[in-house]
Amino acid sequence: MSVGSSDASTAALKRQLFAQHRKSTKTKGLQKPAALASYVGVFLLVITLVAIGYQPPQKTEVAAANAAQTTPADASATSQPSVDQVIATSVAGDIAERANLPIAPNVAELSVSLSVKSELAQTDDTMISKPQIVQPAAGSRDTKTYVAKAGDTVDGVAAQYGISATTIKWANNLTSDALEPGKQLAIPPVDGIVYTVKAGDTVDSLASKYSADSNRIVAFNDLEISGLSNGARIIIPGGSLPETERPGYIAPRSSYSSSAGSSFGASASRALASAGNRYAPGYCTWYAYERRLQLGRPIGSFWGNATAWASSARAAGFAVNNTPEPGAIMQNGGGYGHVAIVESVDGAGNVTVSEMNYAGYNVVSSRTLSAGQAANYNFIH
Image 1 (cartoon, rainbow, N blue to C red):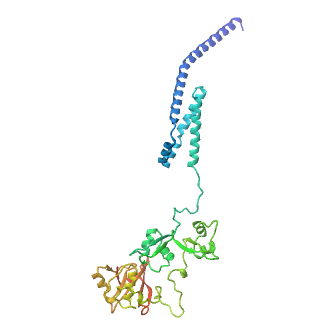
Image 2: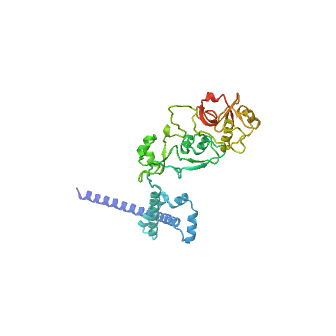
C-alpha cells in the first residue's frame, strides 16, 4: 500500500468518527428534555399513588363505628386492592428508585403494603373447607313437634313439612290419617324411621333390618366417634318398617281371621259418650258421633237412624258427595242404614274406615274398601 492511499484512509476514518461524534452529541441533546419529561411524569404518578394510599389518622371510636356499619361484602371489597394498584405501585417504586427520587422510600413501602394485603385477601377468599357426606341445613336434623288443629290430616301435615305421610304415621304410631285437635305429632327431619337404640344393636344390623344404608345412618346421626348408645333416639334415613312393626299390625289368628279386625279397641264404653250424644250406645251412629267429636268435627245430635244421615247432614249445611277423605262419614241407606268414619284413603282410592257394630254389637273395628266399593257410599264432610 502506498503512503498516499494510507493517508487517504486515515483521513476518511477521521471524517467518519467526527460525523458519529456530532450525531451522538445531537442525540444526547435531544434526550435530555425527554428524560426530564419522563421523570416529571413518574414523579406525578408516584405522588398520585401515595396520595390515594394515604389515609389520615382516625379516632378509634370513629373507625370502630365505621367497621360496625360495613357489611362483610363491603369489607372484602374495600380491603382487597386491585391488581392494577399493586402493579402500578411496584413499577412506580422501581422507577423512583432508579431515578433516585427523594420519595422513593415512601413508594416502596406503599408497594409492599398493597402486595401483602392482596396476598392475605386471596388466602381468605380461597379457604377450602372439609367436604361432608351429609350437609343438612341448620336444624334440619332435629325432630320437630306439631300440634294438630281441627280438620288436619296426616297428608296435609306431611305436605307442610316436605316428608311422606307414612313417615309421620310410623313415627307417631298412627293408624288413621284423620287427626284429633291438640294431638302432638313428632315430625322427623327426613323420610325414614325414628328408632330407639336397644342393647346389642349395631349400625349394620339396623341397616339390614330396615333396608337402609349404614353410611347414611352413621353420617346423619354423627356416630363416627361415639357409635350407638343404648336408649338413644336416632333417625334411620330412608328406612322402611317391616310389616310386623307397622302401626295397627295384628298377628294372624289360627281360629279366626277377618278384615274387620279391631285396631281401634275391642269395645267402647258408655262413659266415653259426650253430653251431646243422643244416639243409642253400642251402635254405629253412637260411635260415628264420638269419633267426629274426637276429630274436632262435631255433628248434630238428632240425625235419626243411619239411613237418614245424608239427608239430615244436607239440611244442617254439611257437604255430602261421593268423594272420600279422612275424617268424613261414610253412609249408606237401606233398613236402618250404616255409618262409619273414613280413616285413610290410599293412592289407588282404597278407603279404610273405622266403625262400630259391624263386627259385632258394641265392637269397634276397621276394614278397607276398594275404590269401586267406596263409590257406592255417600260421604258427609
